[in-house]
Amino acid sequence: MFKKFSEKDSVSQSSQLKSSVIRNLRHNFLQQYPHVEPYFDEIWPKRDNVKLVKCQDHIELIASQTGDILFFKQRDGTLLPTLRLVHKYPFILPWMQVDKGAIKFVLSGANVMCPGMTSPGGKMSVVAKDTPVLLVAEGKDHALGIGMMKMSTEEVRKTNKGIGVDLIHFLNDGLWQMKSVK
Image (cartoon, rainbow, N blue to C red):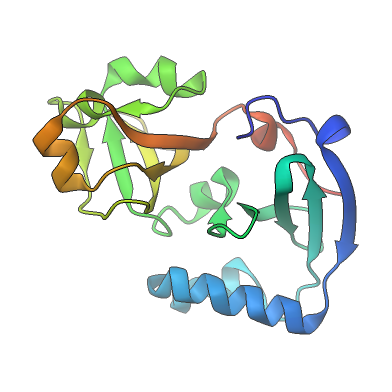
């Protein structure tokens, strides 16, 4: 999604959100990730002014008043945290660990194949199909990317072939390069 994303070419407009819209976004995020509630005021302060940044391909970015991009979504899809936010709060999303051989492919924007998660270096959280997940690598401390499960964990173990995670956002992609919004 963000492989060829650039702030200069992709961002079309930025606007301040009304407090009612902010409340609705906060509520939706807490419904998607209820385990985050004790930390949510630290992640996204209640009185924080929030900007909505509209981009090409129906991508919307949610940025704090300091300009840090907190979340993103495409169309009416799932509100997902950015990698910068997940590096601070890694418990937001369930994680999938890929083996060392998959690292260079994930960092170049490739989807994660099932054998990369079922090999001895891979580990999986138990999740359903179409669940957003955090991708970590064997032997590394920080996350490599964020993706959406194409099949459940049980299906990944059973079939062990094909695409397991559809990669959405990864280190050094266009969204990662975008430091803050003005």
